[in-house]
Length: 200
Image (cartoon, rainbow, N blue to C red; front, side, top):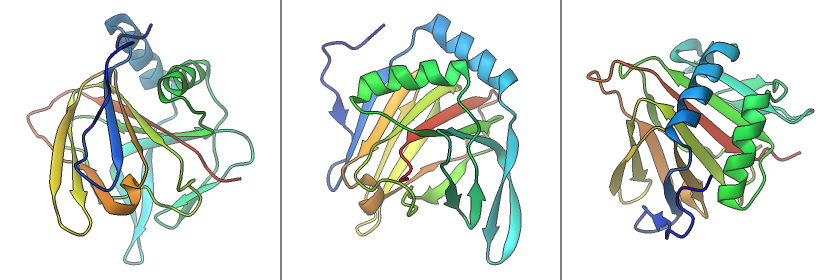
């Protein structure tokens, strides 16, 4: 079901990139069904990153899924993808239809509540297709999502509601950082699926 069939999709960035916020692309019933199934079926694990030579385990939990044979390295840790589940295949197909492209992998993040977030970063690892799109699907708690220009420090914040899709492309990762700031008033979990393309 395309809830925004004829709606113009806005670019939320003022310059040097395109970040299209599609709003909700799932019905309330679909949101609840997918959120519950992903929460229970995905083998969530704390992420491990190396910062200043030390192994750090993040508060948020992650999982990575993708086509066979792919590897993905970030924060000096190399990950092997799990095979697609039925739920992830269905969501991938829905997101691909919205974006007009295909994806071969998905990094999932689970934030238990607003005390967990993500610091400023860009998804610009060498394995990622620099000309590809990164599609971020949100399920669960609505959260602020922030952009910051790498050079002029200009900022942009938008609220990602449950069931919504944000698509970043065309220079966004080159010129902008993004983050998910902590919001301690939020007491419920959020699942974020970021569909992307790993170069073979």
